[in-house]
Amino acid sequence: MSDIILEPLQFRTLTVKNRIIRSNMSGRFDNYDGAGGQARINWETRFARGGVGAIISSFVPVHGQGRILPNYAMLDADDKIPFWREVGKRVREFDCRFLVQLSHGGRQRDIAGVEFPDSISATSKPDPLHGFQARAMTELEISQVVQQFGQAAQRAQEAGLDGIELHGANGYLITQFLSSAINDRTDGYGGTLENRARFLLEIVRSIRKRCGRDFHLQMKISATENNNAMVMGEPRGNTIADSVKVCEWLEAEGVDAIHVSNGSFFPHPRNPAGELPVDDFLRVYDSMLSSGTKTLRNFLILRNDLTGRLFKRQWEKERGNVIEGLNLPDAAAIRKALSIPVICTGGFQTASVIREAIRTGQCDAVSIARPLIANPDLVKMFERGLDKPPVPCTYCNKCLMNVVENPLGCYDETRFTTREAMVRDIMSVFDPPQFQ
Image (cartoon, rainbow, N blue to C red; front, side, top):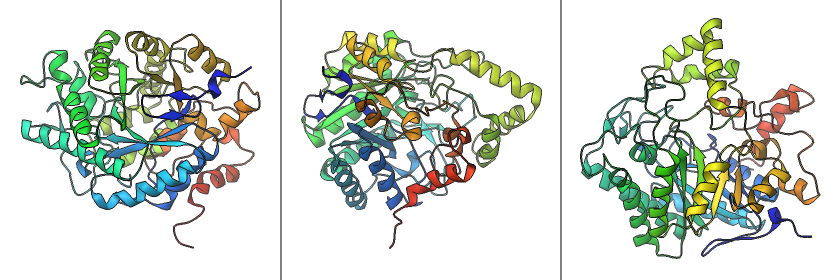
């Protein structure tokens, strides 16, 4: 009998060999100026070799002002095209498709860098969790960013990549416009849901104008924002009903798939759901103390035993008890309303769970990040008939915390025989090196 997990998924103009997609996950593998490096190629081919049907790149800024950390490869200029062409070529050697995730952080920037110290957003309100500050964009700046997304999409097409994903989730710039909890504008880009979605729909139209109708375009959305998860008094933000409507508009504009996530800021108790590794958090959060007006407060809260326990308790309360498949109810609601495929993210690493989600029509494919960091050959394990990896991801989120300062990788020492073995695995992304 065929396994639905391993069956091809047909998008409108793109076919993916199975239903497992490597989700976007960001690492500081590249040059400060946004030029890509060999480590990025090594990183992406690791998962293509492991058998995933497609890879969604890390957060790829369309402009330097939109990056969340330095040392992320960008698509802000034509001189970046040859690098991304090479990434796509290397990934496709394993019959894997490569989608580049076009992104802009807006006010949500962990470390801004020297070139663009000021952040722009839908609002002039600071981020309530970290206190990241920003200035509300003028309509001219909105138009410029819309064109930056369109230009970056055209570069991705010229690089021969298989498609793009718009990062409209997790608190970044598109979310800042979409969200009823964040967007406080009084012009044509604020107020009603239709106005708040105007920025996003203009981006889609700009991409379609430059790239045509046949270039694969999908959208990642925080279907339920849960904006009040960690800051009392904050509004809840967009609901699933709001997001269903936005997705209907996106389908009408020619978007080919929806990628369902959660949360109006990042990290969020429900994205990525799991532990809050306080010790790792404290080791790296000092790098961000100057980035926001509330970062020092957060650092001191977590360093204190009493307040740290209270913060962690609130985090766990808002996370809930479900990790794997957390977003499936939202994905199911969106899929019911649309005729295009729906991808769901959320801690997937059990074949029977994934199989049931697809079989029952809750989604058409799943995207995976942390469990693939832990087990890059997860798909091959499913092909061999395993239901779950022998050494599964523990959802400890140490990978997430360490990425601010350290290479992306699995930092859960309990999964390795020794600490040295863990470090070797983390550092393997630099082999082969840039220069022989």
